[in-house]
Image (cartoon, rainbow, N blue to C red; front, side, top):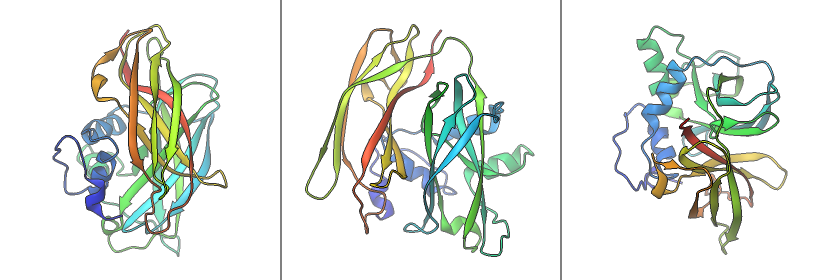
Length: 265
């Protein structure tokens, strides 16, 4: 898949040239969210690590010019955690650390923090016993000429504050066309007691062997940066959901979770 295929955003965004992979994320639903993601990773101060476990997903060190690492974060802490994140340490074949240049690493440098690279999970609120999914994506050109051959991951998450939102997914439908692209639809319902800002459905793409190969989310335009009140619902739909490697597409199925960007107590 060429870069232009990724940048079919519904809203025009200005993205720092350091990170074309943020443009890849924009194509998932056309929203500008790169800056807020960086702000959370840099400023939130993750406080939870013990009790989070990793289930590795698909890893490709040169996926059409990108490093792509997917996986699951299992929450065994006994409580809900917020915005699980993954610090990613790339290494070459000899085990030498690779320096990554990204918006995140440059921002950390400016704040005199250790310039580790990483990614947030696609799911913000993760109750005890449940799963968050992530896909780390970086341009190979941002690795200083180094070729990654292995990696290490470090998990952490933030402590949640206030009443917890609860978003259920109802009537999920998945139609697959003749070339293997998916069209999904359904309804998000606020079954909690507090309003949910920017409700969304989080999607995990799973191959035939059960391996997570990609993540995505759908955030209905009608409630983008708006509150979905308790008991209220909103429909979602999106088509042309394909396997991440267009040259070697593989069949996949979805696992899904309701989520929201924040809550209002």
